[in-house]
Each structure stands twice: as C-alpha cells, then as structure tokens.
Length: 97
Image (cartoon, rainbow, N blue to C red):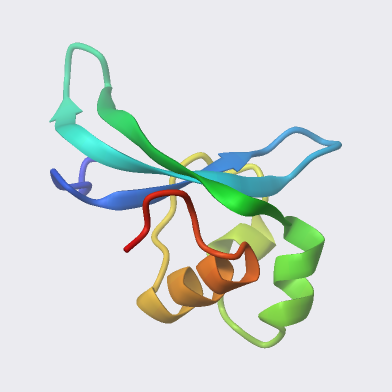
C-alpha cells in the first residue's frame, strides 16, 4: 500500500471463500498515511459483470499474477496487460471511458 499513488486505479476484489471475484474499480484519493496504516479510495464504478478467480485463472493461463498464488491478498500490483484483460472479461466498469 505504501507504493500506491494518488489517482491509481485498483480492482475492488471480494476475497471470501465462496465469492472470490473482481466486482469494481476504485481510485486512490489519499496516499499511505501512518496513523491509519492505509490509503483512502473512492468508488469509480462497478464491473458490468463480476470476474471470478476461476475465470481469471482460465483466461490468463500461463500469466504470472500474484493473485493466483495467494488469492486472499488485499493489495498486489496488477500489470497493465492483466488489468486490460480483466476489464475486458468483466465488460468494463461503469464510467470507464
């Protein structure tokens, strides 16, 4: 989280045992701060269709993505190509231009 910058877009990911999936996109509006040990984000838009972990693993087979090794991570980097493919899989998100 400490490396996140203002304006960074992030996937909002449900990591529960029954529903591991990308459901939306958020934007960093306050970078890392020690007193909260966090960053602040605001909602950008919901995915038009949630993208499940199993679906991502199938579509991105052979792609190195930390989420596939540790599916309950709360923060991890997403390479541009992976970002674009997951967004395409979900039909984009509300308010994407």
